[in-house]
Image (cartoon, rainbow, N blue to C red; front, side):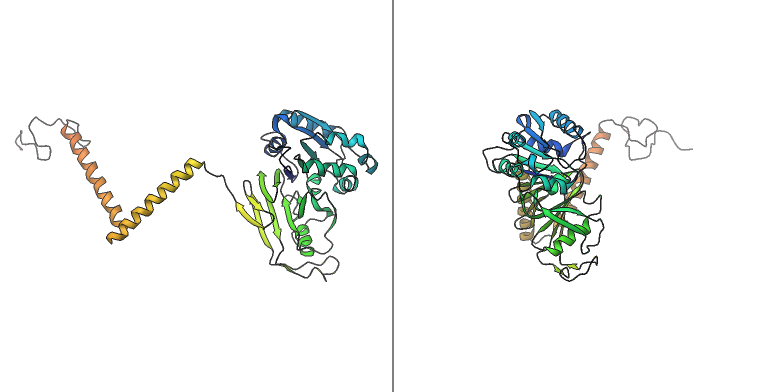
Amino acid sequence: MSDLQGGPGALFAIGGAEDKLKKRTVLQEFVQAAGGSKARIVVVPTASALGPDVIDVYRALFAALGAESVVGVRPENREDADDPAFIAPLHDATGIFMTGGNQLKLAGVVTGTAFGRAVTAAHARGATVGGTSAGASILAEHMIAFGRSGATPRQRMSQLSGGLGLVQGAIVDQHFAQRNRYGRLLSLVAQSPGLLGIGVDEDTAAVVRGSHLEVVGRGAVTIFDGTRIKSNAHNAKRSEPILASGVVLHVLPATATFDLQNRVLLSYGPQPPAAEIAELAAAEADLRKLAKEIAAEGVSPRYYAERKRREDRRTKATRSAMSIGAGESRPEATEPIPAGADPDLPDRTHPEH
């Protein structure tokens, strides 16, 4: 949950098509980061071609997830984006959410205007800023305006425009696996190796806090690191394939955490409770002690394992004998055993014919 007095807020780059009907994991995380029951969210649908319906959808969703208030603000041009009436709701927002649609339109209206500066200022004071699809791409310093799909990186495959710059040193692409956008993101990394390529799958969010990126949702976040790339991007012609050798690939599922500054994986998978970690450490210490004792005696650990198996077999046999001695019938017996007879000897009470 964001504390508006504790520095910059979280950034949510959502890959589009986030679940709105069932678990709504990504949207739930956004609301919690924006303040939970105290969240005051501003929805910005400038990129969308839909009318007021898109605001109604997100208003209902965020309200159902517990937000205190949800309002829509839709600047349609740069004049609107410099109008104080459009900017005022951002001043008290704890969360700002930009919808999907035409990302070039969103950049053309928001970047370099008072509205864009107000979004940046809100983030700096602690508001959570996020977006889905086009709203995710504009978070980065350099935004993909448009481009072609395909797995092979090619020259002139995509075009960049300016973004808000809230995610520094990176390019964010969305609908990544679903629309096969590997090639266009890799082509941009080949042309600008200093930038990280971040591809976000649908119903998935790359959540950035400071220099750390955490993955939330159903899909994965793919990262291309071109720090040591070898490429021919500088002389590839027209739409020729681009050489991209030495790129470091990271495919990060939910719970994975990545250091954007040092470009390394930090952690992945659920972390066990502290008490469980302490118990595991104690058990490991006991095993190490036992191993040392065994080594000191010059006896193989297999000896102790075999000895334990023999002891278990003797114990089982003893318990079985005690049960029989107490009067329990053996499974194979079909007739009562006369008193005083030895159960392990033939019955001699009746002469054989």
